[in-house]
Amino acid sequence: MTGSERLESPGPAGGAPMLRVEKLSVRYGQGCPRCLSGDPGSLERNYCPECGAVWALSDVSFEVYPGEVLGIVGESGSGKSTVMNCLYFNLEPTGGRARIGAYDGGSADVFGLSLQEKRHIRNSLLGIVYQNPTNGLKMGFSSIANVAEKLIAAGNRNVGRMEARARDLLGRVSIPSARMKDAPANFSGGMQQRVQIAKALSSNPPVLLLDEVTTGLDLSVQAKVLDLIKGLQRELGISMVLVSHDLGVVRMLADRTVVLLDGRVIETGLTDQILEDPQRPYTQELVHSML
Amino acid sequence: MKPLYNFAFFDEGSKREVRRAVLKGIAIPGYQVPFASREMPIARGWGTGGLQITLTLVGRDDVLKVIDQGADESVNAVSIRKLIVGTTGIASTDDTAEATLIQSRHRIPEVPLTKGQTLVLQVPIPEPLRFVEPSEFATKRLHAEKEYSGAYLALFEEIMKYGRVSTGADHPVTVNGRYVMAPSPIPRFDNPKMNDSAALILLGAGREKKIYAVPPYTRVVSLDFEDHPFEVEDMGGKRCSLCGATGVFMDEIHEDSGAVRYQCNDSGFCLSRRGGGKGGEA
Ligand SMILES: Nc1ncnc2c1ncn2[C@@H]1O[C@H](COP(=O)(O)OP(=O)(O)OP(=O)(O)O)[C@@H](O)[C@H]1O
Ligand SMILES: [Mg+2]
Ligand SMILES: [Zn+2]
Image 1 (cartoon, each protein chain N blue to C red):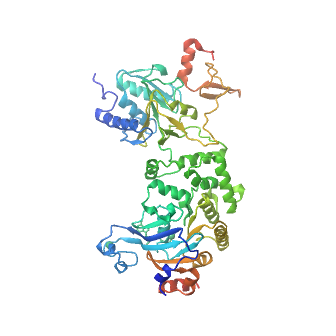
Image 2: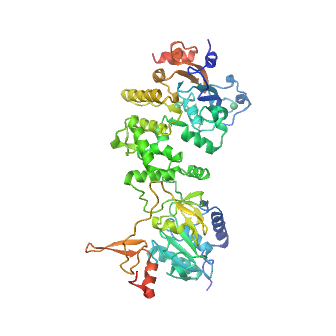
Image 3: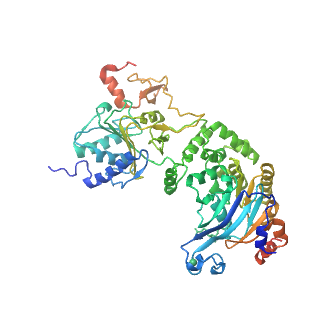
């Protein structure tokens, strides 16, 4: 069985996907006839030797079903964060479409929407936890304000209600109440990631994007954050895209996994299958390197 | 003797350029218009933005008033007034009602401004979102998208820290339902004076090279929350120890004896009440 056959197998939950990404491409640089042909052989890794363009993503497609956790694995530079940044509208893709089940019945390509609509989707249908907490948090503002930021952005203008919601969420991610008014700048890395998670959850989003949530954290702290995510997933049934270069994290959380290499999907399937029976030599290497 | 400078210091070309920015600002209330801020004989950050607007607009028939934090006689007000009067020969006054052109730092006069008057406010930081977003590129985009969460976030944070909105000055306002604007470091007490003002209000930031405007009779609303409505500083029960006024913005004077008394911050207002024989009346 090849990777592309696995791609076509229906999701575990069946039904319509919560998130469908089709042929997502991101190019840095002008591009030239050679690399614009789309022929995978035209690039050296993700780089066009002819014009010097970097194809951070080339024709990346995947689905995430309701309540499912989809893992994205791949070495450094393979394009994982680029996928996340496109989905959160931080980065405009060069090509491709994305549909969100909770928006317009999943019929609209969200990349083609107006800035206002994108902001609405970002504030109410998506949550993100960035690889680098400084991208997701205002380090000098109180943790409560950080969580409330998304609520304010969604149009909430009631301080009392926003504070109550923020306290509730920060409590869920085990930030002690005495520290909720502290700035994340004074927190450990694990606490910062938990504040990011609380913020991401503030609008009750049906889709959560997690980029290397545990990278750089102590093992014991990692375990706590992973338990938290697992619990949230079970309890709230949120669909998640979980990016990690750590296969252990993916094994623990992801139902299905996409393997990225040089901006391309080289394998997709059930996480267990991919880890136990990797088809592509690169995936085999990736799996064996962690055994 | 032929004067050393053109009327009002600037050459006519420079004036035209500033006027273009002023006109654009008036056409788009609350929008920060970039302009080529000139070198001035006073340092940037000392009112050069306001001064450039004033020098550009002043005509031979204008009557000038310059105040700094409410006072006509502070060093800054005096030196700016000297410069304008010295390069134009126009008349100046302390009396708000008499002035046609008023340049001010940190206050809007207590006497309600009237039709035909122009108030020029000096601005240190024109960008109301600067505190939450350091990049100019990003704030420009936020204005374009009318995305003002950041301004609310800053107020929310103050409520978290101090239990209430504590912006002593420069409390952000929405102008004409569109742009969020820094009113310059006037006390909250003065924000309502901007709403539906009969006078034209121009704001200039020399260092940041921005001009913006509130045209006469424009709706100006201070940002707030449902459960934390905008409030001005409470002047209730405070009475000016010099002129007896109440309900105006007061300075707190701490006597050596430890006693506290109050005094109108707007010295021209206070003086005219006393000079007009109304002293002691309240
Ligand atoms: N501004 C840019 N100009 C050119 N290339 C870029 C730019 N930004 C990112 N890239 C390239 O895009 C590719 C994908 O980067 P991305 O950050 O998505 O990788 P990643 O899989 O998240 O890596 P990591 O595991 O290190 O976080 C990399 O080759 C990177 O060098
Ligand atoms: Mg990354
Ligand atoms: Zn090329």
